[in-house]
Length: 251
Image (cartoon, rainbow, N blue to C red; front, side, top):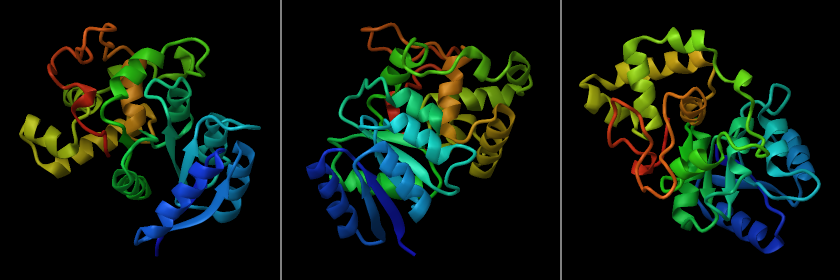
């Protein structure tokens, strides 16, 4: 079965280009176009696509609210959202990830990379643009007025304290952008063991995917954003050099 994709973009030219790109790729099928957030939610409920390419800045309902409606408890089961934005520091992106999006990419991403990202998201993984993730979370995570949740919506100190030393170590490496294979190499354990640790982290912290694990690390203070302009990676204590720019964060 092809991966069914809904394109939500307010600019007609871009919307049509994305649809043509999707339809030209083997294994992908565009099932609709939406010019507003309201249309995106309506089409998602009707078509139940595997992936929604979601622009964050749309009329009637922005991409954050549309994502929340699609990915929330009363949303569309099995549908995942990939956010597309023009700017690497778009203030809408962080709340969109919190609302349930499985990742984001810049609109100037190469066509082949966008198609690969759709497949990654459809497979149930999570993806963050590798060159901007740290700056995005550091710049907009705690900022007022961006839709970021209050501290009360983050895991409690008891939940974090309930992590084992190994789970905390794995969590920091996830926040550093390392893949499961890289984590296994760093810790000298097998891939099944890493997957087991990640699954327990998702359960214990109530996170949907690795994207939310990364965000959680910042919200609860396990990872401190680098100071603006230093060019350094996030301060992760015992995990030096594991910056989020290392590569795409994938589940």
